[in-house]
Length: 370
Image (cartoon, rainbow, N blue to C red; front, side, top):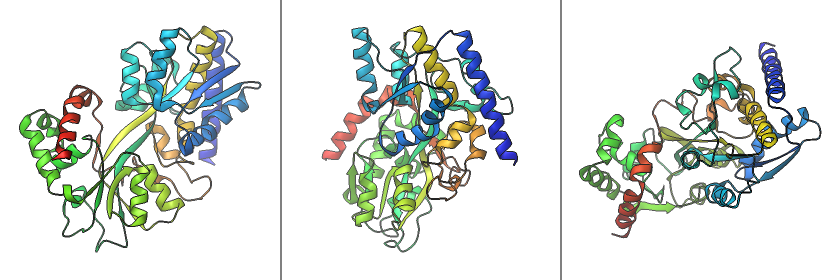
């Protein structure tokens, strides 16, 4: 009863806030294009955000687009042509920061443009450290973590460092074909404190140390580029342990019934969320901001977790995460942000990798060829 009452209160507050916003910004456009990534993820947004928003706005036409992988390139081209056709765009945090720096995404004031939490906590405080750009509103926290075959290993791994122990945990491993994540895990498992990982990687000696650790399993690694590869490699028994996105592993375990377990230790958090293109006409900007306020409120972010195992970015949303809409299983234990899963985590360091990515990419590719 209390939860239902809170949901009704949150919805009422959101509707009132949206109406006040629309009134203060004049009329809003009757059509809106929302861009995302397609698949199960975009479907979760349609169910949690778009359909409820349309139900509240009679006559609104929402066009969905699946071009987020090309968001930076396409928004640059649109801006150059003077014809921005997108209204709200889902991007990873790193792309949001690039678009913001280039003036292609509008700045968002979270405390005036976004909904407060039900207890009155301002949005900026509710999102906390996940507000990594002034143009970006985080939506979900996902992680790159490890899955393992429960039936092919003598025991379940409990530490990320178990991936480097091929005697106790035999079999091939799958790792993403890029330095991000792999370099951090290598140093953590070579005794470097998490707070010192990035300063260590800034030195030639630190890079060499990371590669030396990765050398110990290099001959047992299958390298992947697409998130679907590790679940398939695990299902086929070609690897016994592998990294990928936690949502992919959830699908393999909960939806497909594969004999796979999750290893959450030192999972790497990343963020996905919304930007609004800069310089939209006033009516379209008002509509986009109104939708953004609705789609990022406490209840809506919790609602998305009914359809996919990515953690809501607002602190106030976590207690409202319930059951999967179709499977009927409790979703909280499958979230990367669940306290039981988030004992050891690190957030992808966007600023650091922006400075060192090109150099480490070149060194990583050279190392692969050795």
